Length: 437
Ligand code: ADP
Ligand code: ZN
Image (cartoon, rainbow, N blue to C red; front, side, top):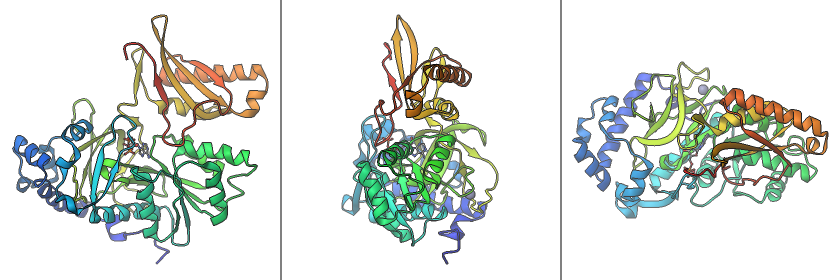
């Protein structure tokens, strides 16, 4: 049994037509359910839509998009599709881009969510015999409890370590022989420096073999760094509170994109400006409809996350849609001197140049009426104490690499290791101090 790479083989490998038929059945059920929530009763009435009119998956387009602003403006209780006493749990977004949004769950919702997370962990090889350490924040944030329930469902011994307290994290790994880690990528690199401070090597002095990394955008190079540092395999995990949390999309062992679980979600990729669907393979904003939620079903939610569908079949045998690594949020992008820049583009350049530490901060400021981009980058300890000329050469290479990638010339400041604010939660990469912004 443990030899199978699938958690739910049939569902994971459903032929596409069957998957579409399942989605349609579930979509009908969920839109019917929505008719019980005050928000959707009104929205459907205004859009002249009734769940009984849903004949094909394309009919979904008759339902208007739902934005974060709609959620906030209407208030969460208006989205309840069941009596409030059926709700057993509330979670809330981490509020990276503003006020936190609460999401309600029934017992069944929690079960379905735990199953999806278990499917992801099992897919990349976590088994009952593993020891799983969860370094994500418990509480309202979904990364903690979401993975916790998933891991227990797989049957791994779970260490609910929670966020922060780095030395303790390391001690726990050693005391219990942790083999699988759930960790935010920027924190994984930081934790590497704490290992060093303790005179330990994360690869040699732990039993680690797998990490689930996610909750924030990161590059392929960042993943490689984490894999090298810890001597493990690291897989990208994507989710958002509005769609329950982790377990929406997850990389399979092929590492050619993340499978988005289409038995539980309908995915659309749209042009962020026009809302029209983009052609297959083109980049756009991910829009998600949850098919498996009863308490607070949400339809056509604009995630603001940019990705693209990856065409073709995956060698792992799973038929569910693959999406590309998330490039960032539509609202992470900043415009400077008329050029659109994503923090991920900067990270890509930084990590490709040897000797540069991973932590960085982009500061946008106005100097003498001109907008300017300043990039502060930590270098490794050896370099910092070493030759001044070498540092200056490194800075030149960075400026050049960045100019090629983003087409503007930033001011680069190399700073001492450990001097930039560290993230034990999600990294805030950009600080915008410009006037008129
Ligand atoms: P908040 O929106 O306040 O950060 P969440 O904790 O729900 O609240 O975070 C979900 C968001 O985190 C996603 O919409 C996405 O922007 C980001 N995210 C989550 N996982 C990943 C990932 N693997 N890659 C890139 N971004 C991710
Ligand atoms: Zn696959």
